[in-house]
Length: 175
Length: 198
Image 1 (cartoon, each protein chain N blue to C red):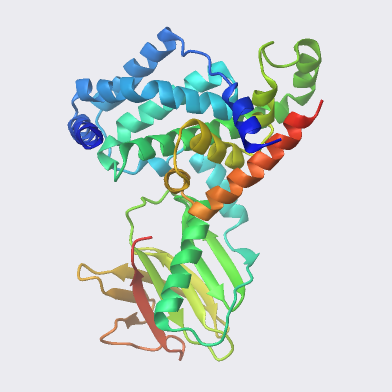
Image 2: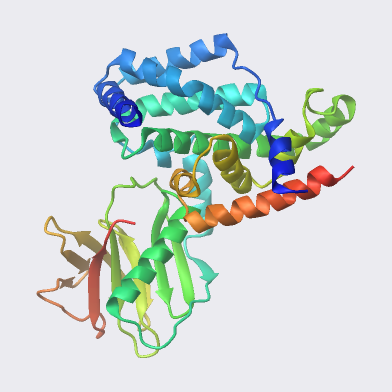
């Protein structure tokens, strides 16, 4: 069944690369929930996650002819790069509006009321550790797969996940 | 906190459902992009703010010296050297995905040259070794890339090109090196090889 699914997906990618919009839509519907969830876990913001997911699929549509190997891994890499860019831009905006953000945080807490301790702990991780954790724990990727998505060595992923989990434990044990 | 406890906590991190309107908007925009004509350029290296961020980084770090402690346990075989070069390049490509021009090893010092433009991941990788009395210089770069390096008090610029047959040509302002015609560069012996895919 897995091989049939892969063959089916390879066929969809090939047809989408040839300009078949329906084939691309099938891929979109297959992966949008995952990419949206991935983006949300990286940025912890609903609007940002929607924006990142949209941008990632637009980039994917533009360059689908360049898929090499796993479409899933390729798409996740685009989403990761898009999210990283987005977070950098957000960080720059935050520094520029630091005083305003401080007042906003004091007034509203800066996050929706249901922003959980886990989400806060994840958001506090460096983006590289967060991405490694999200890909391996939430997206179910092996360290090797995550390494291909993030463009680093498998041992780097293992190290980042180890450090992330240690930091998460420390934060989540705090009162 | 045990691993199980941590995992149970992490599982509590729920993701809100995607807004259906946002999802439809995303599909619409993506289909528009598809119909505008797909490019075969590798999108992985193309991020929204690539040019501004990396132009700035490349300007600041056109020659970025990174102290990198390399174990050098006596003499290595050629295959060991190639494997070490492959590993080093892979590590730096992981740090600077798609925007690395070259990595220049000189003994235990490593110099990183960053790109102004994103690089397609399909470009072939090359290693050039220049013998030196004190410490060999090893340049890890890409087919078609121009790299400048200080040698014997001179600034030498060269381009490396992988041929269709997998051979390597190294061309400078006043020399052309090939395996069949292994000229010396500023009096130094040179070898150049294509690096197998990482």
